[in-house]
Length: 84
Image (cartoon, rainbow, N blue to C red; front, top):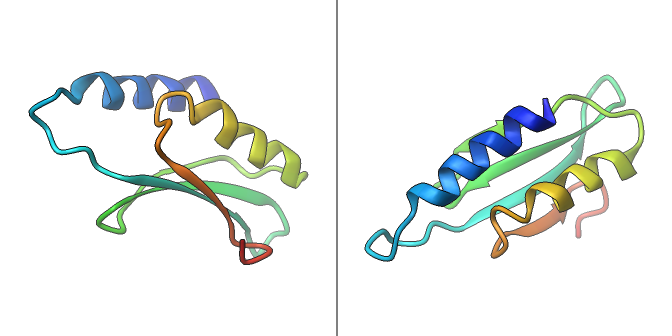
């Protein structure tokens, strides 16, 4: 799953050029009803463009955000489980 997400983000990142407006993205970490932690990538228009698989450990969900952030460096990470 991570390799697919990295490939998607790499395509998204390289399709942007200087003439395209930079779209802001954000990462959201949240806890699902099943108790697993998930990550969303949300575009500035509010559309969720990626949902991760579930992780038992919150640290694993954070790690995915950090690794994928290399393709969207201007993005911020929001932890919805703590409100930060």
